[in-house]
Length: 241
Image (cartoon, rainbow, N blue to C red):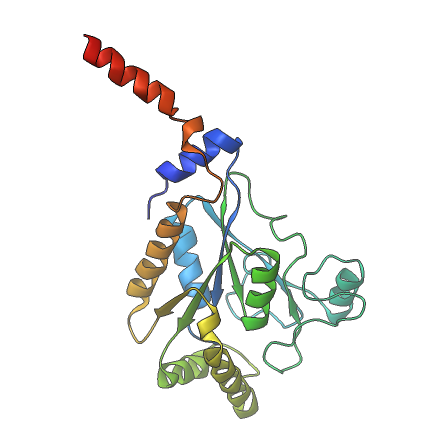
């Protein structure tokens, strides 16, 4: 995936003076490798950043606060919700208990507030409810469903470094995975991360990102960059010589 601007992005930059944020939404069951894919995407493309989600669950081994999640207490989560700083929680909605295990999740209401300057490719990791909310608020966002065969998902969940991954939690996450798979048709793209196919999955997501980066956006007028009159004058001048 190129780390420099595409032709379409350069034209947008000339017309609008800045590049609008292009939002990619990764959806899929727990344990399918979404975060691993995102880490590789961020490493490969300096123009990309991610949305950091707020959650009340404890950090797992190796997780760095502020990298993927903001780990907060239930009280802090509630305060942020009441202050209107969370997208999926407010004074009347407690937040999303994604896996039915008691931990709350929400994206920030100011979705791009923490995106670093100069990074216009933004990626979010959400569940189906979060994807629907983003599609509602950001209709041009691109949803990519990441999945794997059930036996692969089950094994990955078993191997996950999670202190509270007991049989009940495991079954709850598998039930959530089934629900998400039933709704996969709402997404724009499908990518399998099965077995040892991580690098292939990353390449497929990168191909989707590149395709969307080169898409001509609605309302783009190429005549502002290459006026038809100028082309005609050049051709006429050439023939007169």
